[in-house]
Length: 228
Image (tube, rainbow, N blue to C red; front, side, top):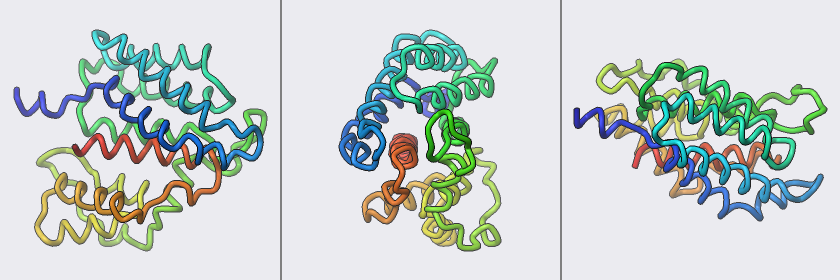
């Protein structure tokens, strides 16, 4: 019971931390936006809206809360990218249908679903030929052939943080090294992520597009909150 409680995720609190991170990088994201110069402003408003809706609906099952956030973002979101975040939240709601709670391992799926729904660049009327934000962050991560030496998923906690770190962040090698030194899955993931965060090794602004940069900030803050 206690173990389950420790694993349970409060989505409102989680996105509240995302809001803090996006707010702190608002101007950097705006600077990357050569079209309107306000992508950072829009992200602060949109993540703030998501966080408020989730915080107002903590009594609902996760899927229902995510669906309400999606609907509010679809109707009240700012900027063209809001519709893609609304789409990602809707897809996540379908993914977690019939779940009474979300656990830490589910956040990894939420990250992937959300970022996969967002085109890396272009305006809403343009195609998604450039790929998703998830694709761009994976390229920044630098696979470097790590898939051949990746450890098998661990059954002790059901959280394959190695996959996510390797896909989303350039910390996969640090993860593997920590695993080889005897750390368990969560400990190794924490070491890899925190090491990258502290050293500045992984920088979402290398993406050079406001959507990918903002998405990287969202991913960083979600994963950082996950391992606290």
